[in-house]
Image 1 (cartoon, rainbow, N blue to C red):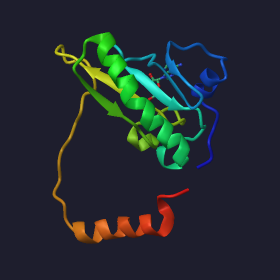
Image 2 (image 1 turned 180 degrees about the horizontal axis):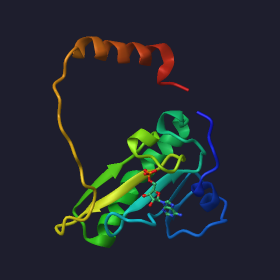
Image 3 (image 1 turned 90 degrees about the vertical axis):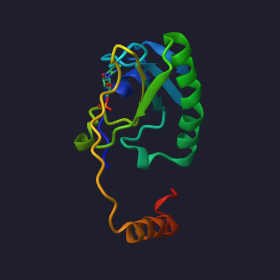
Length: 144
Ligand code: AMP
């Protein structure tokens, strides 16, 4: 996917301020400007990719390493004991900033946090579908 410059580029380039909570060579985390709850934090790779499946293995590993650590810190700082991790890809999936980002969203007793509408369907054709995904992985879809 062609990637446009985003507001997170401006943050990464130091052109726009943010409330930074963590930074290393590969990852930046900062408070969301429109929080769903207190402590709502965004974790982004410094690798500039629009969507999760475009990330390199190295950038993915670094994000994976940072997420639990930042989640622990958000829990400690806010006193929350529950939280959601949300990662949107594509405008149809509610992505508005086209730079990969993970939301860490604490959930509180007052109901603040991520509201989830979840209507489970019924799994049909699971064997074929699982085989198709497994084949795509074997064919190298999962490596880059
Ligand atoms: P998404 O819908 O997953 O693309 O979420 C994008 C998030 O980025 C939203 O929760 C916004 O509130 C947040 N956001 C946009 N601009 C900024 C900014 N300058 N600083 C911090 N968070 C931002």
